[in-house]
Image (tube, rainbow, N blue to C red; front, side, top):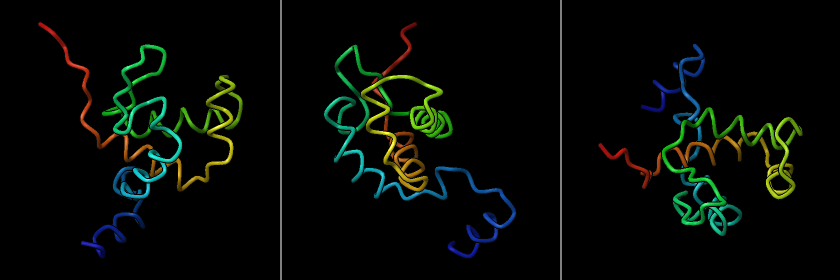
Length: 106
């Protein structure tokens, strides 16, 4: 399996979630994200978005935008600025892998 992932990575065919370390993302999430967004990304506070089940590319872009100032929020910018590229990818993969508590009612 590892050889396949390496081959796909070389061809640019591995997604963010597959290349990231979900376990490391979970550890970082517990350290800095859980207080506002919930341990699994299912915030119960309507002022803090639910991250669970979101697309990893969206989550990674949002964090990069907070880092660069393209997206402005004093709290999130402060948390995002020190993150490395790998930490962002790991966090995005972790939250994307979580089951969202959001549901469509029909």
